[in-house]
Image (cartoon, rainbow, N blue to C red; front, side):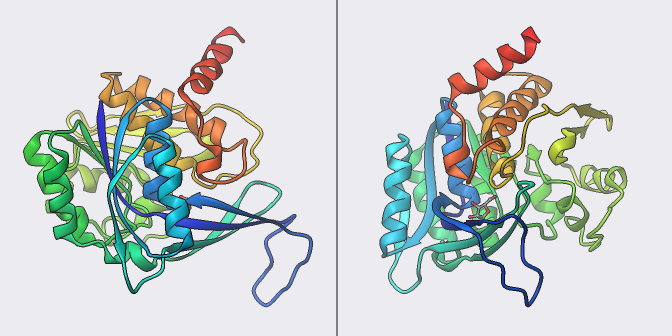
Length: 309
Ligand code: RIB
């Protein structure tokens, strides 16, 4: 099973705090960790740890963070020959604060991630050849998303788009996407309606599906996820696994990588979503993005244990 990831690589500078400071406030008592992240790289590592052969397409700066990030991916068995280096921009950095409930705020300086070009993507995909699925967040320029989607669509590979951070998605792009996987906050922004808080999920789903989207899965954090079928227009709720949350950073990325693996293995959508929920449930019990992503064995053991209880 071959998965191509087109996406971001960031070094996450994480401070764990009892609570996140308010605007203008300074709080002491944090614990600092530097952890590899970036939605694209997180999704790539998630899929690789669960058994996929993964090719990463992205861009870093010529600096220590970039070096550390690509070495980390390579140690996971991920092909990094299509991670480009930009001479003038720094590697992406994310400043993350995590509170005692596991909630976070994330500020990203995208740096070199925004220097990935559509011709880089075209060149990379030509060198990779055939693949089963293309997985992408929205932390690289929109032109790279278009290029990768068009190529994958014509090759007949599954296209899985995680529209994060959220922005309006062109209906023509939606029609080439097999699975769109936003979270409950992002879905309100995809149709350009700027319905940031409390969007009517069903109404938003209907609009997205009317543009030709085949499958929509909305992740709801500790509430599980909802699946909308583009053909039958029906919605199904997938329940969550209850765990003790330490840090939710990267849980969505973990879900996406695992979903891609499950779908490429031929699991049904319900079973792939269940597998992905189990993987992300494990990830929230640990600190950090890539540091929290589970292996195949961990996910299988977790699911077996749930079945027995
Ligand atoms: O989804 C979590 C990720 O978002 C972090 O690893 C951070 O780098 C940002 O890209």
